[in-house]
Amino acid sequence: MRLLTFSFQNQTHAGALRGDEILPLPWADLKPAAYAGYDAIVEAAAAAQPIPLAEVVVQAPIRRPGKIIAVGLNYRDHCLEQGLTPPDRPTLFTKFSTSVNRPGGEIRWDPGLTQSVDYEAELAVVIGRPGSRISVEQAYEYVFGYTCLNDITARDLQRMDKQWVRGKSLDTFCPCGPVVVCTDEMPDPHGRRIRSWVNGELRQDSNTDQLIHNVADLIAFCSQAFTLEPGDIITTGTPGGVGEHRQPQAFLRPGDEIVVEIDGIGRLVNHVGPYLS
Image 1 (cartoon, rainbow, N blue to C red):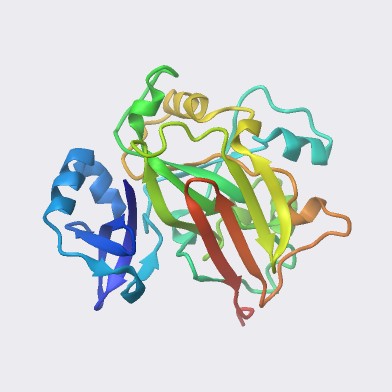
Image 2: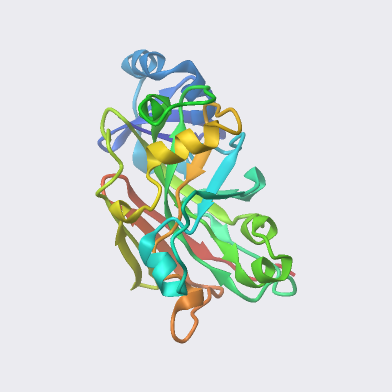
C-alpha cells in the first residue's frame, strides 16, 4: 500500500493511492493513521470514494512528526568523499518538526543567515508502533513505511555552531514525500538505488546497501535511548555527492530544482524560492 497526505477543497486528509486516484482516509495526515494501524487503514480505504490525483495538492506525509531523528555519516561513499573513517556507531542529531516541507514546496532562507545551503538525498523510515528497547530482530515490526527526504543543510551554520541542529532545522529545510510505501509493498528497504539531481544534473547516485548502519540497527540503537512513537521519522543519512564536497563546491541558489529519487518509492521534487528579506 502507498499512502500520502493531500489537500482537497480546503481540507487535508490522509489517503491511499490507487493508480491515478486517491482513497481519502478519516485522518488529517499519516501520523494518526499510523496510530490507527494498518488494518484500520485497509478497512477505511475499502469504504472510500476515490478522488482524482490530479485534483489534489500533495502535502508532506506527516506534517508535524513528534521526532525527526537524523543520522549523520551513514553512507560509506559519503565518508570516503570527506576522508573520514566510517563511525562504529550511529551519529544522531535532530531536525525540528517546523522544518517539514511538502513535495513541490519552496525551499527558502535569509541570505544574511546562510550562504552555503546544500542538498542531501535520504531514505526516511516512518515508525508505526510505539516501542522502546527494541531488538534488531524485531525492528521491522515497528516500521510503518518508507519515504524520500531531502535533508537540506546550511553548511556554514553547521561549521559555526560545531553541531548540526540549527543548520539542519531552518524553516522549509525538510522536504519529504511524496508517498509512504508500507512494508507490505517494501519489506526490505535495502538494495534501493538512491539519486539526486540539481537542475537536471545528476549529483548523487548510490544504493541503500551502502548504509553503514542499516534500518534495523538504527531502530534498535535509537530505541535503547528513547521511546519511538507512531509517526516518528528516522532519516538514515545521505550518500556521496553533496554540494559541499564537489570540486568546485556547488551550493543551492534561488531558482534551482532539486529532485530526490529512491527506487520503489518515487520522486521528491522541490525548488529554491526567492531569498527571504
